[in-house]
Length: 124
Image (cartoon, rainbow, N blue to C red; front, side, top):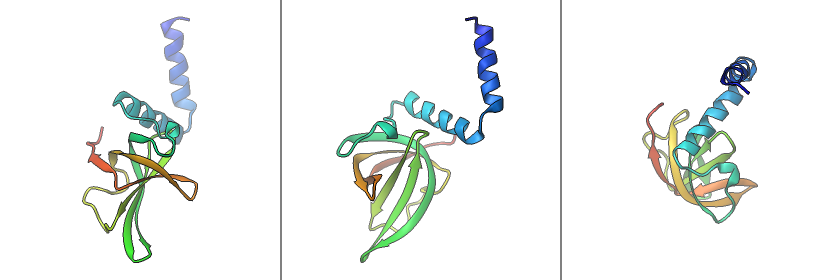
């Protein structure tokens, strides 16, 4: 296979693929390049570092304690980041790229990291 046919194949894929699929591929590739774990490969109880874009951020009252929850998507799967006792964290907003570390748990069938260590990333 020549380099020219490989380039042509990639160009045709970029022109015919869904924008969401291309964005997911870019997010996944960036996470792997930065040495992070893929969310789809993480399992319960495992300590991970994930990197992705925040899809949503919301305050959720759970009993008497408010929690801030943010869904992080790394291109392969979503992980919900939960900060207990927090109503707001400056910089944690939809569309922001975040690198987060913690131990994976499962709540209601979804992957969750409670009180993660996090770093806000600059936009690419």
